[in-house]
Amino acid sequence: MKRVLTIVAAAALVVGMSLPAAALTKADPSGPPDQATAAEVLAAQQDVDIAVPAAAVAVGGGYAAEAAPPPEPVYASGTYTGPVPDAFAGSFGIRPVPGGTLGDGFGYRDGGEWHGGIDVLAPGGTPVVAVGAGTVVTVVGDPSQGWGFGAYVVIDHGQGIQTLYAHMIAGSPTVTPGQFVQAGEQIGLVGDTGYATTTHCHLEVHVNGSQTDPMPFFAPGVF
Image (spheres, one colour):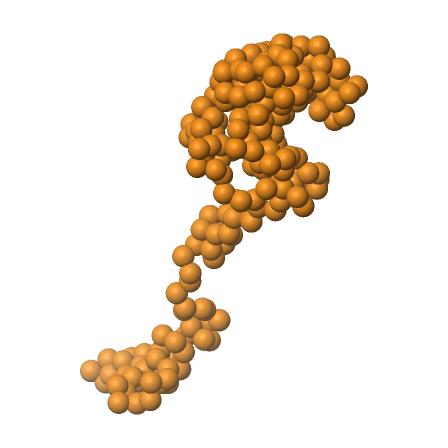
């Protein structure tokens, strides 16, 4: 019996030496609010942060405390940033190149170059069509006369809204100034004239002569 008591006493001594005094003391509920509990003492000794972390959001292969806000669009000087006229919001129901693939969008490219429209990629010779009904106001069939646009066409849709279709094959525009065209009517062929590195249609939308983002003018699901 004495041997049993000796073993129990020895075990109690080992426990008392292994744990801090605070860990063996019951927290006094009447004590000050900042009185440390045994768990907090152990956490402090082990450099463990017991604070509840913010909701984690996956970022690549790791995690971040919160998702980064989307970048604010930056417009070039002189571009139109006002509201889309009610009659034109979502009014264009067809791509300038039916079946074409959306390439670069409106705004500054990664290299800092300004891009005043959207690109619709397609093989050379694919028909380019009017995205909305309007009157043709400019036709440039000779790429040497079209600056960076190469061969291009401009259509006026009324209320100060115009669309420009660039980089067509030389001599391919099939319309003339003053001609009225319907949405979907062919106006030329996809090319790579002017400042282009591949065959595509560069489409711009102008509001009273100023470039603006074409996407709000297209109906949902067109791109």
